[in-house]
Image 1 (cartoon, rainbow, N blue to C red):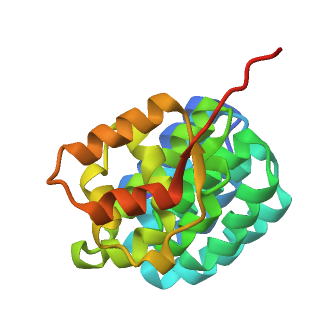
Image 2 (cartoon, rainbow, N blue to C red):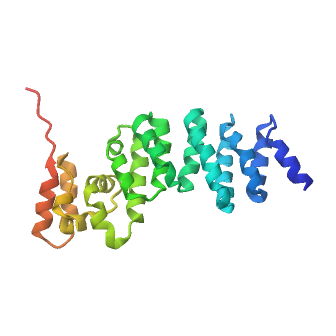
Length: 249
């Protein structure tokens, strides 16, 4: 009991290591009432303390689900008012808690924020395993920032893999360009892409998008791995056209 009291007191210590030890202690021995004591440390000056605090809050909220609604409300308030460092930690928590009520908050951040916060929001929204979120990623998947783009790619992959197998063609056909981008970067989702080209509802296909000659060769090779079927090539031609780079005269 005394050790617990001492550790809680150390949350306010001026020594970084003391605060970190206190947070890690609460991850193992924390109670529901300790979660509120941890929230201020999401703004701690030390990254290790902030990161440990986020992971501890995630564990305790999952352990005491009756506290979830209260804590989520406070996290939303932090997301609107605090510093970038705090927001990064909050987004990680919201994502790992799979808080669907935060979806609109996170989508807005993806659409309006710079790379640092956008990256964290993309990671967070990927945890939600919600196909509807894919529409929010269709612009940032082509980001020139490598880290942001990779975060999008892995979030798309996570969401696609969360869809029940028998529903993948129906739900993912409108997002085939996103799946193609995952394939081009990670060499994943080839089977899903082929099934969409083969069985997808033509009315659900998105508009055409230009691809480079190299990308088209890769996609054609993907199709050729499977049995030849005319509908596949017809659907391929409906959504893909070559990107030409005219020579300067």
